[in-house]
Length: 130
Image 1 (cartoon, one colour):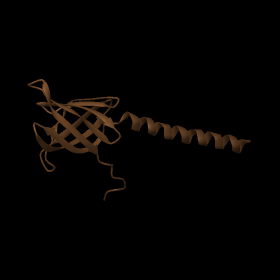
Image 2 (image 1 turned 120 degrees about the vertical axis):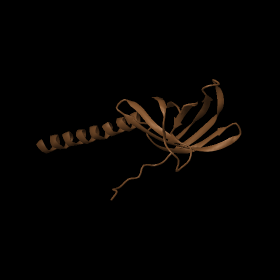
Image 3 (image 1 turned 60 degrees about the vertical axis):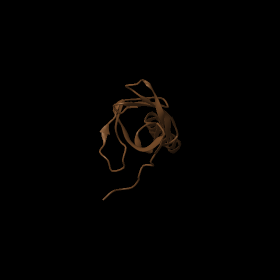
Image 4 (image 1 turned 180 degrees about the vertical axis):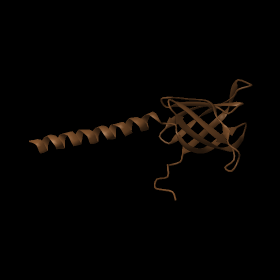
């Protein structure tokens, strides 16, 4: 009887540990390394994002060239599968679908749509680094 009770407790603890991880991952839907393209005024330009959580808020950086200088994203907001952030003159309004983030770009000074973007999250690297 004691063995059966111990097995039941261990199974419940294992189940709870798995649920905690699932909850954490579902809350952190926007974090990661994102690569993609912005299509604006007839031209395409690469875009790279780094987004991370800081407590209950998000922050990040962006750059338009792979080896270019990173700049801070402004006003990063994540609500469910919707993400919004600014890069100074541009506002990005996107929707997540798995590892794809896509949406529209708004020119802030003009207050008008300026293009579209599509990005893919890089899969995290697992293992140890030496």
